[in-house]
Length: 219
Image (cartoon, rainbow, N blue to C red; front, side):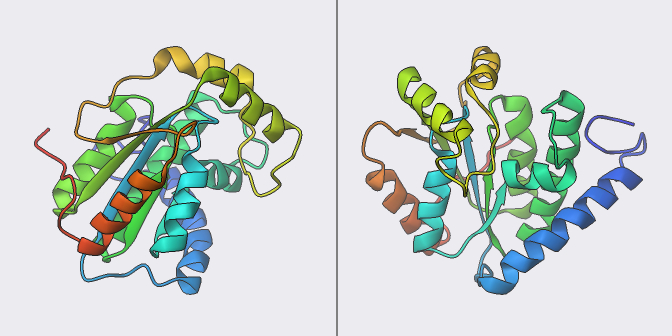
């Protein structure tokens, strides 16, 4: 079976379909509590190493405009209650997330994908989904000074923030950092050691405008 969860004929595998069904049940609960359907679908992709502030930004954004958030750390634990963060586990998770994102965008939802998305290989499926759906796409890349990240991750491991689903600590950060690639498309850069309100409000404006966003270009 291909790592994408597709069969050799390009159809979703049985495992991918089962995984997406499990995650869909969780996300349908979110949809029932918020109205994320708009006149036009919208897609937001967050990218950045653990501890750089992606999830905090996503929640602040959702407080301002209704969004369906696919938070990879939360959904990973639905599929793997004791995650190992292995490549195979991540391939399962991302395959199911990509399938559901395309489904929700087609239904007219405003969708935010909160995951590390560190390389163009991981970001490319989202570009392709946006292109196929003719859906506005906004990319936001997050950074923070290493010592600030180290402190945040230490707080995470200590359980200071009980609403945090991630188990990623400093070792995982250090393991992932060398593989981070620059975002090659137009995007917002957010250093979360600085104020984030300017980008936050600009993304809110783009979502509300519906058609003024950065679009996915040709592959």
